[in-house]
Image (cartoon, rainbow, N blue to C red; front, side, top):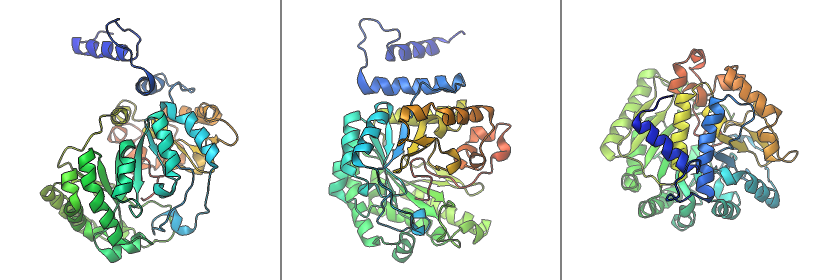
Length: 414
């Protein structure tokens, strides 16, 4: 293979970074950064070689030691009365010690509020293993003081805020106080600017709030979102709750009405300086980047680029299956945030994570991914099918897909 001068220089730099070919004058990268960077390259190697047994380890972990939440949001499975699950603290600590040495990001979630997920243990283990948090919260318990405590370990804070109308917000986020959440956000955003912590907002797109998206942009801007360079992401409802069968906006409004709601939100986003993404099936998808997002300058920022690279270079292999693992409080292990029973890989009560990661189920799952013989649950999952590079492949008949989910949210409408 012949390389252009720039490509050869990049290759040499990568080799130096991995200490594979390093002049004496160049110091060796030690510890966590070296492991993370080497792991990213190994993911690409595992994909390129179509291996069954992987040398890489998950770069992104979703795990919380319990599934406790203080709200019963109508679009979430918690509203249906999920039984409480708890992992023993000692077991959770041992698990984190197994997985985190190669991990860049941890999402402390299990259809739950992370402020209730033994946050002291989570922070302690993240400090110990130099891992950062992708933190999704309903912001009822996270005030400015608590945010300062979390900030050194945050890669990005995501706040669930679905409507600027108090009654609508409190109907959707059953158990929440609109006034308290707004107060907390007003405290958090100036601190985020001070500490350079990215803060985004997520709204589940529903019949109840579809017409309010332009006003929601204004609320976020009024609370300090413009100065914080915040973004707003709209997510479609998922099918994991039975409490709101009439809340699907696509069955209630026609295409013209929906386009009007979304286009009005885009226009307000341009005016107010809030980046906006409607992560919805076509023709409803909208994307408007108004300002460059804040960047922490840590390895997890490279992980985001790795995910983009795997989507482009290996579109037939779901990027979550390549870089992500979800572990429930009951010990069940899954290769993605949706965690369907069909994709159960094992349980850490029965095997170590290492045994599960390259066990028979994971190997069989990888073979199916490489062969594009997708499990039924993957064929309609937007994490795979809404990737534009996937849509350009012969497997694109699957591409209409379902609603999208934000990685690290438990595959739920958050």
